[in-house]
Length: 438
Image 1 (spheres, helix red, strand yellow):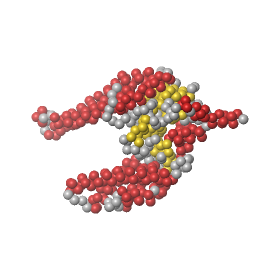
Image 2 (cartoon, helix red, strand yellow):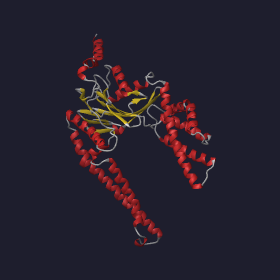
Image 3 (cartoon, helix red, strand yellow):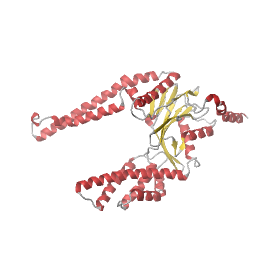
Image 4 (cartoon, one colour):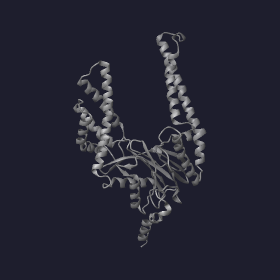
């Protein structure tokens, strides 16, 4: 896991990320990962990654730096165009994502989802068996069918991932039929099926890769900065999972993106582990707010039953109606309470902070971004949880005039012993510039 934040106002955008990376099953943590990069050597655009450290096994650092080299002197009008061009680069790089690697990822996705269905099926069959004392094959098939239909219906409701549609989904189903058949035989070995069940499982295998459903292997990719024709900064965030053929499966996260304009002038956007940023912004930890919400609703459901029948006038129907009306009124009071609480958080906590962010100079934007990431790291260090946030914090500020400026940047090598690294950084740009001048 990780903690990252982008703080944006009309002047600049500051991005900060910790250095923790979790290895294997989550028991080993290193504090040396790079998560913030310059996307261009000349343009005011940065990129930040969280979640999976690579795409189909290729590290994001490698992909970003290869793209940066290929981008060279090219610049785009908007930040979204940088993102689109980066995605085209990923989708059109078959040498980095060969067919066998893609198929391994597809197989893992299908097998993982089928395992989920099998676990649910076993629980339902067990419950039925305890209820009746026995269960035959026809009942098992009906339970299996009902379970598969439920998942199938859920996936059908989901929108297509960007660049995918019905024809692509049909092609995926056809291409993966043999693979799906083998996985079905492995996962549901010894379980009676039907033609309808198999058909819907084939559908599910295709929809897993054509619809907006993303596995735990996804990565978050944050673009921050300015397009060549933009005078205000923007942040664009995407989730990326994998590549099928020459199609990248990704989606845009509206709630984690922001473009500054005259009516929308600043924002604080946290990524990954964002509980401490939410606590700072709203004055209450999201887990505490969730507990209050759940517990109050539990109390409401019990409240009418606490009244004795003797205290309520009328026959049984009137008493039942009285309890129902009472519960509805109390629910209305609770709804009003949460509306007032939300308004209070906005007026007393969120808006005062944003009013300051709106006018913060670049150095203070950087200091605030670093502090918010550090706050999350400190909370993890002071609890019994694994320190999944920690290590040096990389901080960059991107402005229109100055471009991407590193405020804090770790190196895995001593900078004073590697002057050639810094000398070579702009060598490609210098060569391209000289060619252009000629």
